[in-house]
Length: 415
Image 1 (spheres, rainbow, N blue to C red):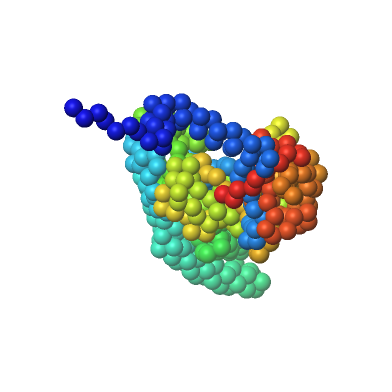
Image 2 (tube, helix red, strand yellow):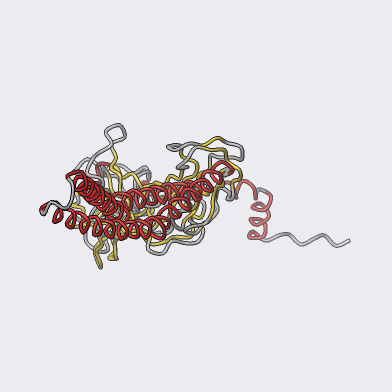
């Protein structure tokens, strides 16, 4: 057999490395880790920073509340009675004049019929006075006047004869009595004609009775109409507290109506933000049930008083074009736009320290080290804040929570 050729020095070295490969890998890993740690010590850790940029900023005040109509109508009965039927359900849309509740009307019908009969009787009495009593009184007056004329002629003749001695005193006295009776009959007939004529006492009494009967009939008709409770205007019934068989009476609320028309949002704004709220400011709102569907609103009312228990002020916003899904008493969130700036320096809120202290500052970077930089702030948005002074475009700030202290070396990394 031929003996194998001896290995060269290089091959022998490679063989030794392969035999100790795991030790070599560990040594390389330790060397790499050491180099990385040395870089961290010399250059500092890599930190994601927030750059100062120019952009548009909208300052808003966020508040929550509920949907509400400008007012609500409480509907009740105007008479006492038993409910015969309830014709609507809670949440139903109704129109002006639509029947809502029916009250039993048997007794009301009887009163109405009785009042109608009283009117007919009073009208008949007035027609009787005009068609019968007055003509008869006028005829009686004409007869009485004729008798008076005859009595006067008889008295004149008897008086002439008595003056010439051709008639006795007794005959003259009889003629005088007949004349007096005729005059009395004429006066009585004239009075009957006057009382039966328009403006006379009998006529006034008959017309008064007719007016009273008509008033009683109208009251009965109104009470009969009250037996059907109707919607006073278009809207949605948001509450119902009446059922068939219920005894109702005036003063008790049976239904609550939210009238159709303007929809408003009623929210509670923190007292600290009151100085930023003004009438006419635009807003974007969303219902908690539909958070991704926002709609426009406008501030139309600011309560002059403060709720001392919650340190809030009530603000109302009108919704010009309410979405179809909006319901009464829905919970809503509102972003009220209080100011707007375009092309200003902005920085994310998380990069600004001591924001509420009145002396805000940021942890900026200069010559590879973190340092404290005071800043002057402008508009405050939900996620970004306007920088008026202290930083310029292109500068960077270290956000809170990065674990960096003042004076530490850092390597800034843009997000």
